[in-house]
Image 1 (cartoon, helix red, strand yellow):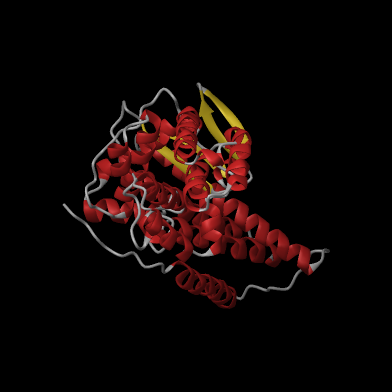
Image 2 (cartoon, helix red, strand yellow):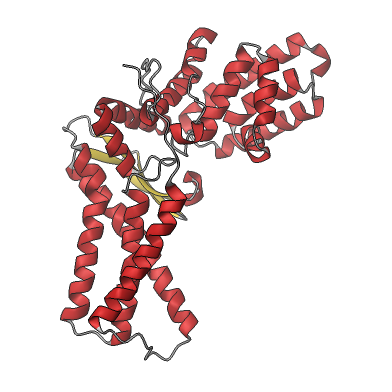
Length: 373
C-alpha cells in the first residue's frame, strides 16, 4: 500500500508554548498552595537557581530513560544502549561497557531491540518512560507535603519537577516530527499498522552494532512514512555491506523525499541525503547533482562531504572527482579516511565502507587518470 504524507515540523513553536505553560502551571501551583518563594538558605540566589535547573534536567532524563529501559525489558525487549548525553552504557559480549556519550551524538536516549525469545508489547515499551515520569512527579509532590518540608525545599522540588513534564513533551508527545520520538513512533505504528516495520528496524539497528547479526533487506515500495523511510536506510546499509550490484544499491537509496527533514529521524537525515546524492553519482546524473547540491544550504552541503565519516567520504569522492575535478579535494578526503575509521558510528560496516571507497577511487581514476594521486 502506497502511503504519502507530508509531516510538518511543529516542534519548536509547540515546545516553546508548552514550556511557558509548564512555568505558568508552577506559578499557579505556588500561588494556590500559598508556598513562600523566599529563600532561607545561606547561598546565592543564582547558585540556588542553577541547582534547581541542573537537578531538574538530570533527574528528568534519568527517570524517563531508566523507566523506558525497565518497562522495555518487561515488554520483551533488550537494551542496545543507554545514553545519558556525556556518558553511555551498553551490553557487549555479555558485559556492560561504559563509553563516551559523544559516540551517540550526546543524545539522551535508550535504544531497545526485540528479544527473539519473547513476545513484544511495543505500547508498554514506548510508554515506559512516561509511566515512570508520572510516578516520579506524584512521589515528589507526596513526599514534599507529607514530610512537611520547608518552604525552600518545596520550592526546589516542585519547580524542578516541571522538567519531568518537559521530558514528556520531548520524548512522548507526537509533535517532534523531525525526531521520531516515542510518541510519534507509537502514532505511526498504530496509524499504519507498522509493528513489523518497527521491529525490523530495531533488529537492523542491532545488526549495525553487532557483527553476529545480519541486516534484513525489505522492499518498502513507494511508502514514505518515517518508519518505512528509516527501513530504506537499512536497505542502503544492507547493499553496502553486501557490495551488491548497482541495481540493488540504487533501489536501496530511494530514501529521500522532498520533505526529507521530516520523513526520516534526525539520526538518519544526513545518511538519507548521502544516499540520494550517491544514487545520482552512480547513475552519472551529474548535471542534476550539481543543481541539487548547490540548492542546499551551505551547512547541509558541508555535512554531506564533511570528511568526518565514511558515509560522507564516498559521496565526497564522486563530487570532487566527477563534479569539481578537484585533485586537492580528493587528497583531503583520502587522507581523512584513517581518522574516520577510528570514529565510525557503526563498527560492522567499516570493512564494507572501505571496500566501496576503494572501488569508487578506482572508478574515478579510470575515467580521469589525471586526477590519480
